Amino acid sequence: MDTARANMVRAFIRDIWDEGRAELVPDYLAPAYRIAHDPGDPWDGTVLDHPGFQDRLQQSRAPFPDQRFEILSLFENDSSVAVTWFWRATHLGAIAGFPATGRPVTMSGATVYFFDEADRLTGHWQVADRLGVFRQLQSER
Image 1 (tube, rainbow, N blue to C red):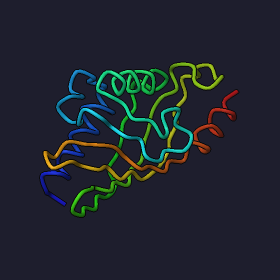
Image 2 (tube, rainbow, N blue to C red):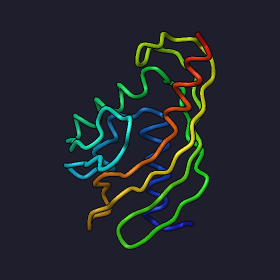
Image 3 (cartoon, helix red, strand yellow):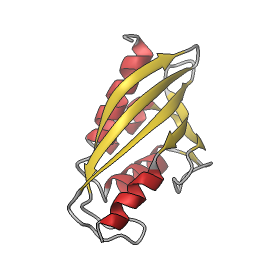
Image 4 (tube, helix red, strand yellow):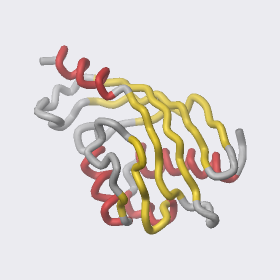
């Protein structure tokens, strides 16, 4: 899929989540970003402004600063883009009581990103295999 919104989601994932470029958050997000559904994410159900999203980004990337998303597929409708993805990272910082191990960790998931009329991201609905991540971290102890 090669539409403006699909390309924007690709760039958002690359710039924000892969590269951690918090200064670019205002280029992608509407002033209010709603995490509509993201079980296991401490921000599930919250609405974040740009500084709040930047803080979430920094806290989320801290244990896995080399994280990379591989986009597997994208689907689009009138107001959203759905993405299936595979994530890889190295466990380099403490998370949820698990000290850094330096070992690789993987996860898969799907995210639906919502847009406003100005093509800014207004939030997401996500499912991700966080249980699988915790199992990998437990097996590393």
